Image 1 (cartoon, one colour):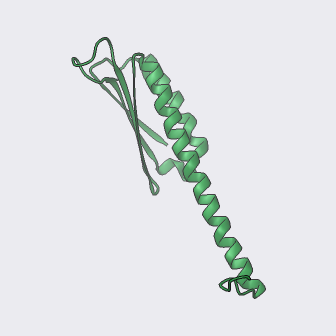
Image 2 (tube, rainbow, N blue to C red):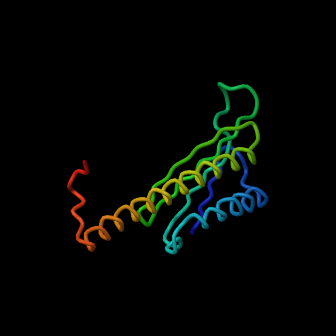
Length: 126
């Protein structure tokens, strides 16, 4: 997985960059074997200079490639907390997609198995 990091309104320090790389790289366990084709576009920074009191940091992640298009945003008073929350949100979405794919595969396999047995699965049972 390729990770592109962009900072808006703040300086992208090596500490922030390594933290983002560590957190986003941990999402690879939810991806299939073709994770190399996936690009993670990460944007961290201040969400606005006004309208909200105090420091408000935002972290956005957009995963693209290999039939995948996921987007998540998190706003927190701490930048690292925002990165953690957005990572958790993306991980949950990836886990749901993986479960959905496995469920559909099993359902299709069950239909094929019943067809091979010669059962008429379209008939209603009394």
